[in-house]
Image 1 (cartoon, helix red, strand yellow):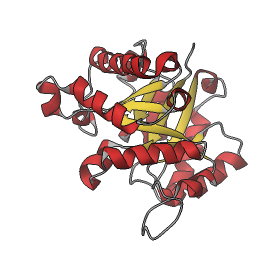
Image 2 (image 1 turned 120 degrees about the horizontal axis):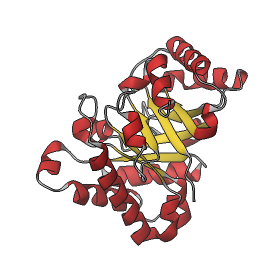
Image 3 (image 1 turned 180 degrees about the vertical axis):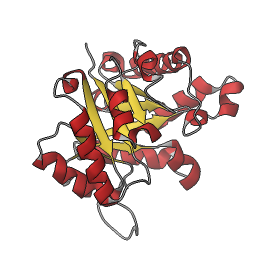
Image 4 (image 1 turned 135 degrees about the horizontal axis):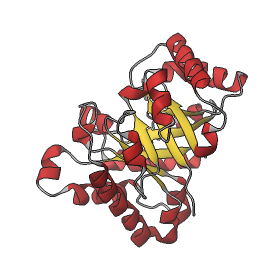
Length: 255
C-alpha cells in the first residue's frame, strides 16, 4: 500500500503560547493547500501552547495536525506535573511523541513506562510516535540493530497487529539529535528497513501500513536525500522546525 509521508515538528522546550501562534500562522502562509496532498504535517509545541495552537489551527481551518511531546499513562491521580492522555485527546491532539531519547536519557524513562504510554495513547484514539535509536558507542560496536529491535519489541509488547499498523515509529540515532550530525541516507534506510522487516516478522503484513520516520538534525539540505529512500516515510524534525521558513522548506522537500 502507499503510505502518505508525515513530517512532524518537535518544538521541544521552545516558544511561549504567543510565539507558538505566530510560528503556526507563518508556517501556514508559507505552504500551499496542495502541499498537504503529498505530506501530512504535525506540530508538537510545549504543553503550555497546545490549546493556543489548537485554537488557531481550527479557527483558520489549517491542515496541520496537533502533536504533544509526552504523556503519562494514568488517567488521573497524584502525579504532579504530568499530563493524562484524556487531557490531550480533549484538545484534539492527533500525535503523541513517546520515548524520545531525551526522555529516556535525561529523565530515566524505561521501556516499561514507554510501553504503558503507547497503550494509553492508542486507547484514546491518538497516534503514538515511538522513538527508538542507538548511541554512538552502540553503533560503533555494531549494536545498532540489536538496540532498536529490543526497544521496538519491548515498547510494542502486547499490541495487536492493527494497533501496530496505527502507530508510527521514529528512528532517531541518539548521536545525531541536536548535534548537526546526520546519519547518511543509506544508513538511515538500513536501520528503518530493518525495523520494517522486524514488524513484518512479528506482526505480519501490517508492517506495510506502519509509517517509519527518520529524526536527527534533519534540515532543508538533507531532507530530499532522506525521503528518497523506500522505507522512510517522513521525518521528526527538531531545531529546523522552529523557523517557519526553514521548516516549510523541509516540508516541501521535493521542490
